[in-house]
Length: 243
Length: 285
Image 1 (cartoon, rainbow over the protein chains, first blue to last red):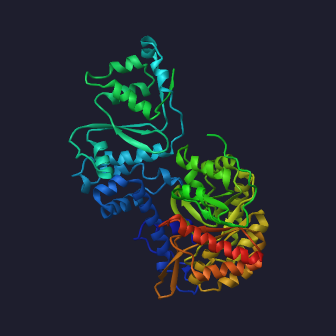
Image 2: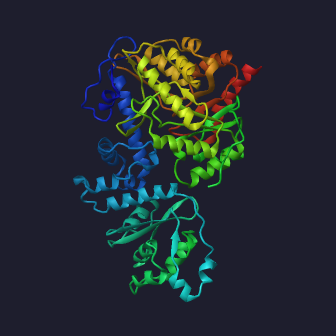
Image 3: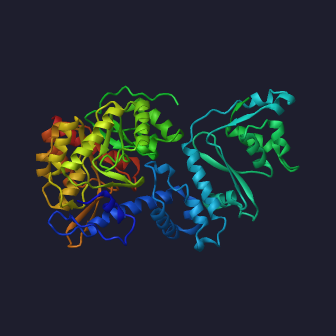
């Protein structure tokens, strides 16, 4: 009897011998017929990763990406049938690869791809009417707490990860070598990575923790541009409640 | 998220297609002969966003078949309770016209392999799969359809033919069957038996849906033809002929065209659906 344990053992490891007791239906050993399953598993997982990491495919090329993906999928096959979540640990895996050490920003750019997918499948929500914010007097506003859309995701990086993501997938200005924070926002159904100005991430993190608006602003440096951040959040329907 | 509860109790005996997001506008504008749609359950298990929004719109217009690809009904261990709960949630939200899964396994040691892996047809497998089908039907509160696999190899230990195995599952569980005639053609070619003989032996009275799809051609170590179920091209003529043979015996059924990789523009897929429509019209005439 061939247990699924034995059938499974060789699927992700070509070094493991093909199980006995499998044939071509004519009493000849299955041979490369077993390889069809081996190939199906590897190719389907590899292609799912390539689809999920368009910026990394673009930055290192499909052939290099396939090598990385093959190593990753053998070590970390999916742990759930929800392929939409597969690859969440690929950024950390990329960050640990000796061959990619010369591209130190790659893991953070990959984190944007992961966050874009998370945002795409996140729960729907309705943004507040911008006039609701304008209607508050200053004292009330400073004590107000913000609730954000489940599709909003903040990513911090010591590299210009957001600019590299835009540059490789959308074209545009060549990124400068500065640290960058990126905010994934989904106005309706299409997530968008927005590169934040100085201090915005600190303010957002404080607000996400439930800190009142006035106190959250204390974390901001002189150069922080409140108007730009608020207008970005409001146009992307990212603020869903004020309390 | 508002309920998308469907008012279509059954799939019609008409052509359907596997739904792809890129065809959303085309399908709403001009579905051609397409009378129903099939979705892969696992692609609609996110919390929100475009997939569920599109599905809600489509569910108002078309009967929907929910087709699972990740339950691992043939698995040696118990069904994943989290995944069953997700299926129950989706089926409860949508109340689709049909739910189906595969005679296969895809999860082992909590690793999901994203492929439909083969089973030996033995008494032990029969008992296990029947128990799993019972559990699914009980949790979902509805009858499910079970699909025959594409086979690339055979197990020496098998003691049942695939058709006898399926017939016995239907008898024990009351489930229905999803007959994939491309899978029949692929398996029959690969294991060297007659696809028409398979249809003759198949319990057609239990069929609730028929699948069609394209396959790739390869060779085994001995130069024998080895067909790979790829869903990446047109349905070939011998599979259309097998559909005609099947429909002549079964009468009209819901017939689905699957195209999952290298997905073409809508007119190409609609043309395949038109061909299925012609086959169905011939049976009605």
